[in-house]
Amino acid sequence: MDSRGHDSPSALPAPAANVSAAHFDQFAGEYGNLLDQSISFSGEDSEYFFQYKAKYLARTLSPDFCGRVLDYGCGVGTLSGFIKAQMPRAEINGYDVSSEAIGRVDPALLRQGSFTSDPSQLAYNYDLIVVTNVMHHVVPGERQAMVSDLAGRLAAGGKLVILEHNPINPGTRLVVARCAFDEGVILLTPKEVSRYLAAAKLRQVRRDYIVFMPRFLSWLRPLEHWLAWLPLGAQFTVIGEKHA
Image (cartoon, rainbow, N blue to C red; front, side, top):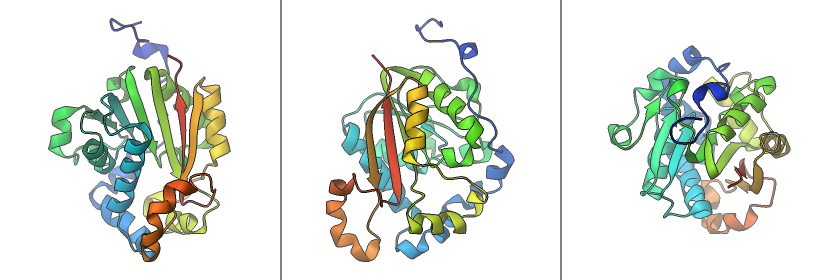
């Protein structure tokens, strides 16, 4: 245990490292543009979807959430910025395998939290860890180790939120097929994610489907939170909680 009462870094394995830093470094400068191109048929740009997820988190947890957050796989920090805007009292931290991406994080975020590509700098007392569209880049044989490691980095009562592409949604499959940095990925199902949480000794507290309406149906978007049970959303979330 360390001086704060948490497991020392040597007690748990490092985060899965099979995702190539060089692979993502090459896309860091064009990350937003590449995402925009892959989702252009939806009528929205990538910032709409980042903001959507941040609003989902604030609605699910509370806009007044004031804990310590880790955006795991934060890229250039776009989602981190929207989370901070939605939950201004939270401390937002980020990790990404790409040092090039970390170098492009907004200085305002860097002033209020730690953003790093060095896994040894990650803490063991996060109140919330958000993993957005990261796990499909991890080979299946290493996914459990990653989830177990992240579960070990939660404070008592902390939550791990995994957001992923819904493989049964045809629009999602089109986005993945068009995205330059998603080549060769293997998508996950909610059931698979639930197994990882259970093996990591986290209690599953929520599973939702999100992102249903393209822009031409935007007038129906206020109804989306009533459709969280419907397995047709473009993405899904599974939330696990560490025992207090």
